[in-house]
Length: 101
Image 1: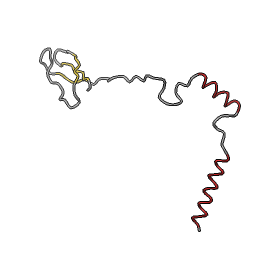
Image 2: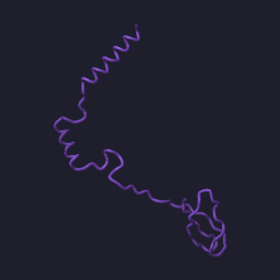
Image 3: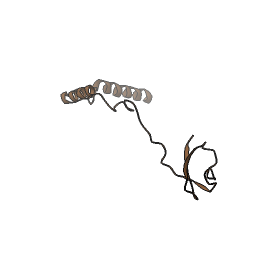
Image 4: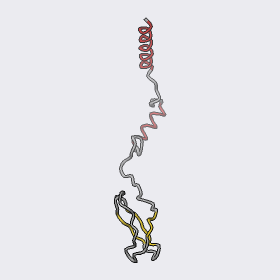
């Protein structure tokens, strides 16, 4: 349930009220019984805690060092396995031959 901010238009009293979303807005000041107005508030801040939210966030220093050495030696993940691409192209050729018969 959200917390709403209110301010009295007559005495200037400001207060917060913990209400359900479906509850009607308050209309009477608890101090002077004057008319109050609901204020627009900034809301609650979002705080992210933990070791990271994606697999690539907050990598350890040992991982970063190993990644740099792999990329420097040419053993990085950009290397393409030609045997797997040959298999996929040959299987697509054989399936197109069988469908044309």
